[in-house]
Length: 279
Image (cartoon, rainbow, N blue to C red):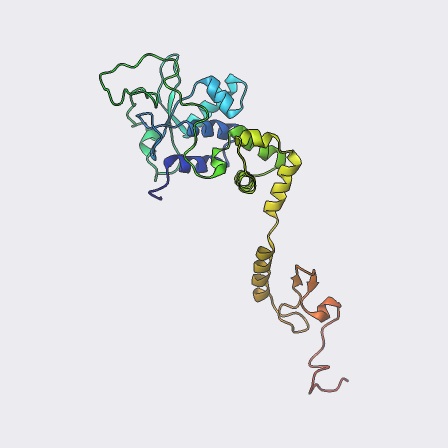
């Protein structure tokens, strides 16, 4: 594990690479990851606590029905992606983000139920962490971070909203990794001065599919490198030419001129200097 990599980066990667989570599960988990803080309400390398009101969560994840959000939260808890560390009536539940089946992160104790419940997490602009005797005012939101806070990741794909990722996946038929590549490609090739969500709304589905086709099509250099590997490993053709039956991708013809013409093998050394006479 890299000492320079934030926990949220590893959590996001694990969520989007998971084959057991649906798109809605990933959208909810990503929404919590975007708002994660440490016990002092700050974004740090070890931040793994997150809390959201239902209204904010439904907006961020693009899910309209609260009952569906409640069901998804229960399933994320059941499978170890979220661990509830504080439940207070009429306040958002504080969750600890965890990565299941990965003992290398710092959340193993949380999955085993030995995590000490932290105090109510203050707002990131609140000064209660510097003034221990100050009693913060009661709030029904417990300092929910703003929805548009920038994420910790540096890749453009990591800052895309879950609803945007789902739209790209549905429109182009792309996998999670391909969605990341499409977002990075769009951001790299265009001078985007607006929020990515606003820019994405102006891109038709046909263009998104075209981006995916471009990503899946090997570049000439990649085709050439792959062909060279095949050429060195291929056997001689029936005419004795090394890798002669191999089809050259640039011309769609065999390397051996005789194979191109579909001629049969020449028996023995017939037709070569010193060959014995036929018959």
